[in-house]
Image (cartoon, rainbow over all chains, first blue to last red; front, side, top):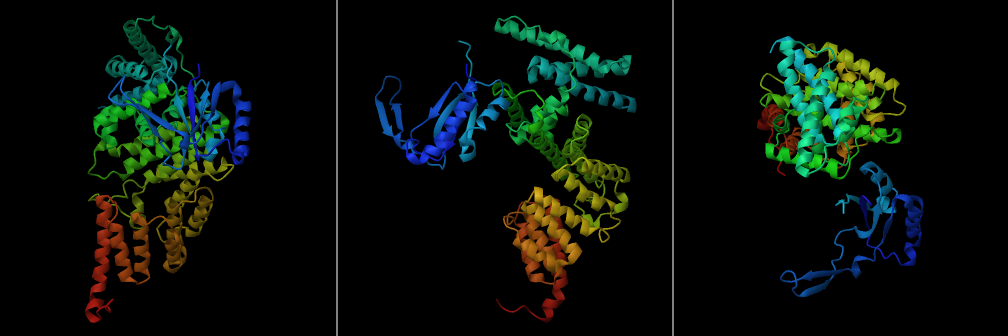
Length: 116
Length: 414
């Protein structure tokens, strides 16, 4: 059971573009090196591809689909990684190896274990 | 309280902190450990003055607190329908328990205000109400702050551990900053403030001594203790009878505490011998030692002070450090040399002491109109009442000195 989620906040780039190749390679290196404690994670398409879904008037109401939201700040959510770490210090050590930590920021959040 | 009673209270408090540290490790809960330790401390304070202090006070407190912790855990387990865990029965104090508690309270993942509150509550053993009063925060706000911090420790799993060597310098800096902040809270308190607020300086000194005891070879820790001891040596001289600040230049040095200066200077030596690289706390303490050793403000070794600031700037290049260096340059080389240095510092236009320093230098350079404007700028910024009073007095002196001049020769129209 992964214990932390690392969210990467960086420039709102398109990881599929050739100019991101060098940085993407750094993420692959990270996965190769830290794979044992990173059971999952990947990059996301830019916020221009985001779709917001709401249901109007409560459960069962009309589905409202809108474009966005676009990143209004310099840094957008661009990826996520699951971490399998025993405590916060370990999680911070792994998160600090994500390229986002030096190109932007990584938010580390503990995952609730409902024991189910 | 009698002095014997005082000694018992001090012993209970010091040993209580260690017992708390051990119980947090074995129960894994700050709350349970705190309740149980509190209970044992209250019992000790009732029984020891009457029955005498037991041979091994720490063991007595630990056994008593452990029993209570087991009760609490059993009760909680019953409520949750679980078996009480037996892990706690073999609780023995570990050498590093207190250090673990220090590093957990001052973990950088906690907000600084939370670190300060936790350190005072757990390491200092202050009650929640005392912490709130000392930090000028309403009690419900403080209760919420402490609860959130303890929740984060539990939910984000901030470890109860002494950091490995490669992380120690950065983590120690965080610990030292917290203790220094506690000291400054107390140092900034005027005579009108509550006693518990003024007592924060003593609390910070106690914590710094504890750290120096636990890590006798760490330059940061020795430098921190030296700095606090040297600041504290001027305690009685730095406030006027009305509670206003007395500048270093105007302090009655015969009222400085000679024993503290001796201790502080010797700590600076110890810290310097153990510093492989320049260390901010050690350097600040070295500067404080230059002031402490000077027979008068004029006889201060300003050359040495400026040199220490030069080294300090290599590890901590901040606008305020530059300002302090410029003040020392003014004393060594004169105001004409210092003013361009002060004017060149960027980012301090919101800092009252930048304006006040400019005002003082301009006054010495006999440029009263500019000096007055600079004092007035300083007074528009955030200052404590005694500090603002002090600047208003300087401004009034300046106007007084200007008056005859103005009557003879009115200033030219703008």
